[in-house]
Image (cartoon, rainbow, N blue to C red):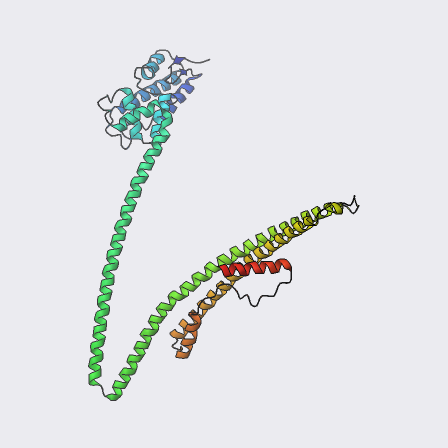
Length: 415
């Protein structure tokens, strides 16, 4: 049995607590739900009209506690108190479970407390029509009327904020890039000027020393100059060859990936070719045996009909089987050559990289002679070979293999 019964209509429904403690819990839940609706919340300092909502909630909570303490409703018109706050036109308070209350709470969670407080003021009539002259205020009215659109509005606001943040980040990155470019240009200019000045000082010192030295010292000077030039040349050559090392390393990695792909394709083709060859033999044997009057699934003989079968039938079946085998041999040969080509190119790139690194080590140790340099550079920059030599391949005996080799050679000549 309830202690009282008050119908708040669409703004809260029927309030019929079984005990006074239930009524206290009911109003405490409402106070918690609207605790943010106060000018003390950041961003709502200018909304003084929110004090009336908190005062009404505090008043009802005080009445509920007094009723629980006295354990009676006598002397308190609780129906008038609730209806005056929740059933007015417009009401002072919106119940958190009503459609408008849920919309206001959704706006607060999805957008901001300021937007929810603004919508509350518009619905209460505190913010009149003159206030609703911006798209944002009109949108808040729309969101209250259609709560399902709150999520979409929140997503749009989030996208807009993310776009502004992205633009700010792009601007920041552009500024950092400009600063980095300016610093780089300044450092490069200073370094270039320092290098030129150093070269001038070295040249002037060399000229001065050259004039003041005797013939012996002059010979030592020329020797030192030659060593300096050799070091400079070795450094320049080392810089050039480092790019070659990186190039051949990238080539090796590329050919390694292509070799793996070629091996994978060869394996797939091998499985498919085995199935195709088996099916070809099976169907060709079936046609020939059945045309000859033999039972495919046993050894019993039927009525011999070989006299009624044209020899051209056997020729066509044999030719089809030979064509299938020829195509399989030819395609297998192509896949195998692709795999061997990539394997060969990977090994060649690795050899060139190792030779280049070896030559760089010799240069660093000043152990590279002209003959060594000539041999290594000729080996490094020799023309590349694609594929493997075909002269070393064993000769095929089977007819399909011979036809595949002929087709392969004709394709190479046309290419």
